[in-house]
Amino acid sequence: MKFISGKSIVFATATSLALSAPVTYDTNSTVQLETSLSQEVIGWSHATFPAIYQTCNETNARMINAAYKDTAEATAYGKSRLLNYGIDDVYYKRWFGNGSIFTAMGVFDQLMEASKGGMLVRCDDVDGLCAANPDYYAGHHRDSAPTETVICDYFYRSKKPLSTMCFEGTIVDVGPKHYAGIDMLHRYLHVPAMNMNEYIGEYGETLEEVVDFAQNNGTFAVKNVDNYLYYIADVYSSSVIPGGCLGDL
Image: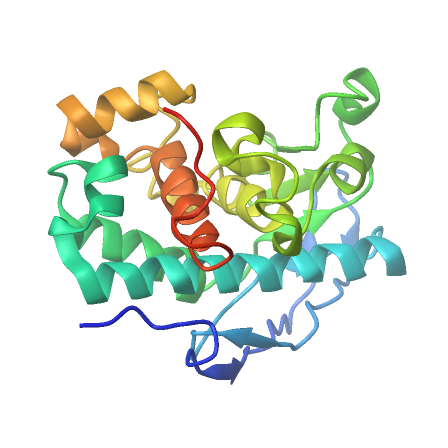
């Protein structure tokens, strides 16, 4: 079977995330949320996205929605590769080893089509962690509000669109989280409802750990967040230039 090219992947309209009821926060104030913008996304029939909180200004919301669209596009390439080449694919073996493809397929579907009702992306530095780590924290999950993710100003300065992939260094050089759409996936997976209470988790974050899981512990490779991030970036880069731009492992 042949891998679906960028031109042949079907465009579909994403479902808008509608929140009919107000949400109460730990400040004891009840607020109405903005909804994520409807947008065309590649390769998903029922893509869902976290709501964007009203503290995000128009520029914040535009860049977050651009990251959402990149997330949908990159994951569509990854899932298509799984469907068309299976466990014998060089990309699969590189990042998942002998891990279960059923687990991998389920994670892709969970990331993009599972309900994200109640999930919230906000732009106010409610916990002060962005200010405390101005050139390091691009965002963080809120332990005190498990459905919420804060996006820091550093996200907008440091994270790049998929259109720049392979033009700013190899994936090994810059890391998959260099790209806003792929970084957003790892932020999804900090949310307990998305990671199934850490069934999928950050068990190893360095490249050495990721490669070791794939080579020696496939069971953990398909449960480790960064194995998915490297797989998605590696596969997507192959649509940019022949052979991709992984770099030397």
